[in-house]
Amino acid sequence: MNHWLEKFAPFRYSWQDVLLNGKYGIYSVRNPRARNNPQAMGLRDEVLFNQSKEGNCAMGNMRVIQEAHQDPTIKDYFWASTTFEPIKSFDTPFPLGKIKQIPELHSIRLIK
Image (tube, rainbow, N blue to C red; front, side, top):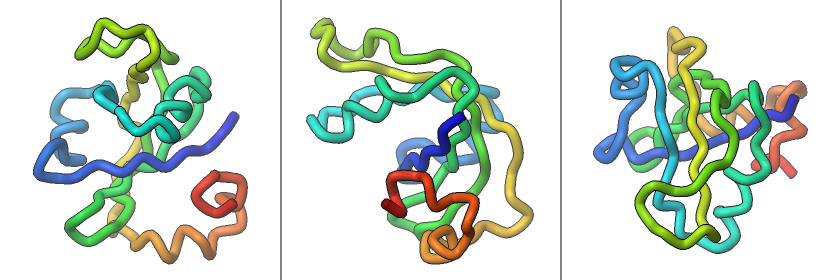
C-alpha cells in the first residue's frame, strides 16, 4: 500500500464536503506532472487530505475506492480521475511541516 497527499483548496471542496458526500472524485487535474498521480494510485492506498490556501494542514485520511478512470470533465483519455472515501477526521488538523517529521510517512512523494 502506498501513501499519498492530495491538496485541495477549501473554497472549491472542503474536508466537510468529503464527509457529507461520503466520497470524493478528483478530476480536472491538468498539470502534466500531477496527472501521473491518479494513475499511480492503487485500490485501498491511503491519502492525506491537505487543505491548501487556508492553513495548509492535513484535515483527515482517505482511501482510494476506485482506481484511475476517465476524467468525466474531458473526453481526452490522457486525463484520469480517482475516487476516495473518508476514513477518519483528525481531532486537530496538523500543518504540512509536521508531516515531514513522521517517520511512517517518509515514503510519500512529498517527503522524497
